[in-house]
Image (cartoon, rainbow, N blue to C red; front, top):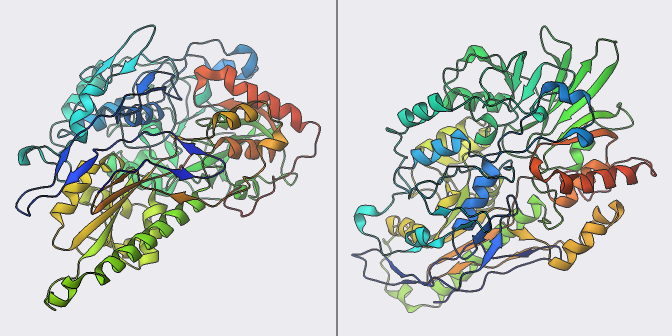
Length: 596
């Protein structure tokens, strides 16, 4: 029994450790749960890629902090009139960095989790750099003007199996949500209404996108919602009455079911066709954003008062793919240029060079097959099979995949398809999956955890202690477990590659990697449990953002994430836009319409 150093090999990215589990899970009698001796390794610190806070990477705090940054983007104070001027010459407001109410709502919902886990479950969006958040007042966050750090002491219990049965979490059970609503309502009543930042407004219109945290916005005729992640729907409540909400059908299902918003305000729009918004000068089309189920790009076609027509594209959160640039409503030169592109700039940084989703899914499937084959060989080599009663249950390997409330579905669906098995999710998660209008997925779901070989749990539950408890609860049917934690934020290029990309021409940035074969190695390994990190992201990588920009004729680009780092963002945006003027614009070469 040993713990191996985590390694994921590929020529175009490396991994910095973000997940350190206990060194070993000790074997004990069947009358007690497996125990764990915690060893906190030498602490290392590394800056958060979003807000530059120094975090101890040998603690789960790094992962939690990053997800918090990516889950609760807040506003930059500005006015609607700003949109009539150049973005690059007028952006002078200071970005705020505060946790969204929904991040707090999720933390309150998890009453059995340590108060330090004050973040939501989704990988999406990003926060601005200047952190004024009070999200972790009860946790272990200390602030210093010179060096802000998250201390690891509060996280020690998260890595330990030495927990009493009274404190043991039951992942299979639904969450307790009885006492958080009143606290959220109280915080909501005390919250001050912030002005809607400029980048939430769609130019030349009276519409906003993902702007529900600002109360009733003056002179706003409608609210567009790109997808059902809390940093985008934050502020949307059951008593919403500020105006119509336009979104995809899947997102509408989730808004009605999970937030219980009055259906009279929720207006699902059709996909891939132009739809005129009543009483306005705007026609809109929804295009799949390749982010999470229900996520869309909004293409706004606006007739100005002088009768000229302009086109604005809002990406929301998206994983850029060639098929978007090939879409009949976007492909150029068949269509006019994009006047304004509101761009998801979460990973507009050359250090983020994670592989394509398809490559990650294939690596997960290959790993599952390899592990199952190794397990079969071990069973064949033991003499115990000769003494086993024929009526005894043949135990299997359990595959557990971490997921967000909405997101990462493609990973566990493809594994289940390969194994031709059922998928188990707890009652709350299953209700959400039923909103996705995927009949094939519905047919694969089961309410019996012992029937399914693939289980879906919260991404934050993919930890050694939690997985040991999970396997123990199902020990009558499963004798081993492999878990996958799909997240892309820690998967970076090497330092030399990052420096090279900082100065590389656009034609070099968009070149595909020479080696696209991805192999996975476990972050944690014991006698019967292995945990793998997977560089699977639902945001665009640096190279994909470059390819998307290079494939379209765009007049102006407005970042919607990491606004406080505008100088860094516009270094690349302006450079690439300038290089495009010397060449014919066409879709960047691709191996498959689903990825570059």
